[in-house]
Length: 338
Image 1 (cartoon, rainbow, N blue to C red):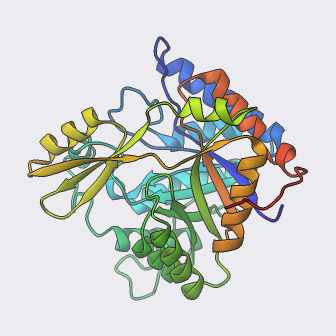
Image 2: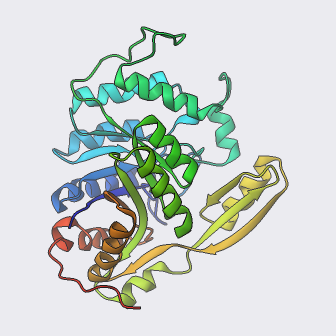
Image 3: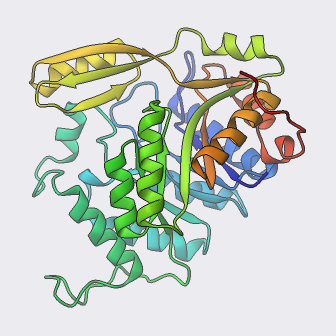
């Protein structure tokens, strides 16, 4: 197996449980992920979300680093439009000093919530979320300790400077994001579980490889594994991808029609809601391995980050265990037929 595997955990709050329980399950999953041979364990950022407990990845990362020993721990990702790049760099430099060589700084361009939480996060700030490319460029310079002499903040450092700086990843689901990551010389993660169009993935991969040939190209996938194909497909349920198209041209992906309606109303614009089949790879470990191998060969993928949208905790942990590098690395496979 020529590629690596990591996990994206959103700290889901299942019916009848609490946010505290969800976060403790995240800690346990990180420890298991390390035991099962995964390379990375990332936590997400979602705001004002009743079903997800992960609203502050920086805080959660610090705890996870203390509860694990070797696995890389990071953000998937910090929603940079809300924050000062300088403060983000300081936070991750502190983390990198505490756990040298184990910290990943994943950056997202999305808001991580509905318009109301975005307004709350940016309330009272200057530029409220604008100029994301400029913010990201400044953040990269801060992490690299290379702010240009002509920059208005020339000479600034995000202390404490770590002996091993965090690796920066840009998370996105479009060719434009791939182009930006290549331009800045940072790793790129294509979120295929958000944008399932193979044409877009292919264009993003080509742009990134052309612009940054030695960069790390990662694909994040929604995957459900079970002992049998039938069991895996049953775990998908009726899951759909819901998209909101705003009159201004902006499009966002949410998890339910209720969220879509709320987003549209809070945006203050006219909007249209459409439902799409969820792009979930479901099957036995053997089948999943075949799909991953095919994607690896077609798009020259360096790593896969696995997101598992299962609403049953035991089945979710089982899925990650079945897909663990230690489990699937030795699977003997045949090419997918058809």
